[in-house]
Length: 577
DNA sequence: GCCGTTTTCGGCCCGACTGTTTTCAGTCG
Image (cartoon, chains in turn purple, green):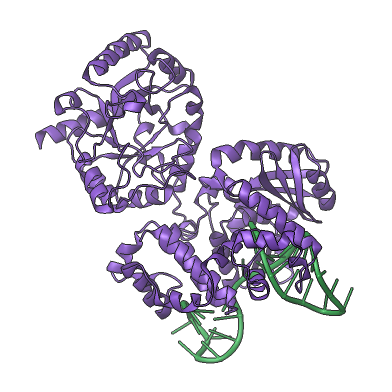
C-alpha cells in the first residue's frame, strides 16, 4: 500500500471510532497516525520492513500491531471488527460540510440514512428538522452543502486559487479600519492544492470589518459572519475565511492561521513546556502577554529563527529553527536559466525565435530546447530527420541571440521496456537530455520502477522529468518505488526535475525533501508549451522551497558556463566508464 | 490510543460560530 492509501484507511478507522461514540482521543490517535504517514517522506512499506514502525511518534503497541498488519497484508482485523453493523456509505456523509460523526450517527440511528443521496432525500422531505438538536435552518444548510458537494470538488490548484486570494487580500486591505492584512493558511504555505482561502486582518473595529467583508464585490454567498470571523464564497466558488484581530495580536494570529495544524500543535507544546500559552491572540505567561510586532519576534521568544511559511509542515523545521540550522531557501532570483521548453516543432505554441525572445525578455541567460520525441505522436514528437531540422533552426536563432545560450535538448520518451526513443548515436549529439514516461501508466510498481531505472542508467540521460506522472486533482501518480528511483538518480548522477507546471509540481515536495537528504540534484523546470507557462516558475520554486532546497541544490541556478560544465563533465565521466 | 526525570493514571491545543438551546453540543480550522 502507498502512504496515501494507508493514511486514508487510518482516517476511516478514526471516523468509525467517532461514529461508534468511542473516546475522541482514541480516534485522534488514528488521525495523527494518518497525517504522519500521509505527509512523511519515507515509504511506509520500508518503515514496516525495517521494523521501525514503533519508533514513529504517536505509535504505541496497538497502532504498531494494527498498522503493521495493514501494510503487510492490506487488511486490518480491527477495522472489520469496528465496522461491523456500520454501512460503508455512512462515512461519505462526513464529506458534507457541517455533518460530523455525531450527526452522521444520529441520521443513521433514527432514519437509517447511509448515503449522501438518502441524506438529500430526507432533507427535502423535511425529516431532518424533526430530529433532536436539528431545526429548519440546519436542514436548509445541509441541502445547500449537498448541492455544492455535487457541483464541484472541494479542492483547487494553487495556481487557480492564488490570483483570487490576492485580489481578495487587496479588497480587504481597502476596508476601512484595517491596519495590516495578509494571506494565511495553506495558500501562504504554498500547498499544491487549496481547499479554501484564509485571510487575516488587524483592526480595532473587527465586527465592522467582517460586515464589510461580507459585502465585498465577488461575494456570492455569506456562510457565517461574527465579531472576529467571517466566511464567504467568492466567484468562482472559492470559500474565503477572514479573521480580524487587534493589531497587538497580529503576529500570533498570522502564525496561528498559517498553520499547518501539526506545526501549530508542536509550537503550542513548546509553549506549554515553558508554562506559557500560545493561541491566536498572543503568547502568554499567565495573564502577561509577550509583545511581538511580527512573526520574527514571536519566534524569538522561543529562541527560534523565523520559519519560512512553506516549511511549516512539522517535518523538522521547529527542531532546525531551535538549533539555528534552517536552510536558506532558494528564491526566484536564484534561477539563471530555464529548463524544459517546447517549441512549435512538437506541441509548443511558440517558434524557437519566439521562445528565445521570451527567455531573454525575462532576463535569463540560457534555456534547454526540449521538444518531444517521435513516440509521443499526439504531441508531434520529432524523429531523427525533424530533430535535425530543429537543430538547424536552433543554430540560426542562436546566432541572432549571442547573449543567450540555447542547449540542444530533448524530452526523450521512456518506452514501455525502459529503452529510449532515440538511438544511442542520436542521444550522444544532444547537449542535455531529459527522459520522461508518457504512456503505459498502469504497469505494476516493480515493472514501472525497473522501466524508469533502466532509462536513468542510460549513459546519456541527464535529467528525469516529471518523475511520477501525476496530474493534480486529475490523475494519480503512476505506481513507482520513488525511493529506489531517487537512489538510482543519485548513483547515476542524474538530476530530478521539479516540473513547475502547477498541474504537475512533480516531483512532489515531500519526495524532494527525501531526495535532498539522499544527495540528489535537481532542476526546476517550466515544461513550457505556451507564453503563459513562463509565469509558472514561482510554483516550481515553492515546491522546491517546501522540499527545503537551497540554490546550491538546483542546477539551473548555475551560470550557463557552469551548467554546461556539469553536463559535459558527467558525460565524460560516463563515456570513460 | 499514547505518553511521562515531578506523573504508569489522567491528561491529551485552543478558540469561534451556529443553532437549538435556556447553558451547550457539534463542527470547523
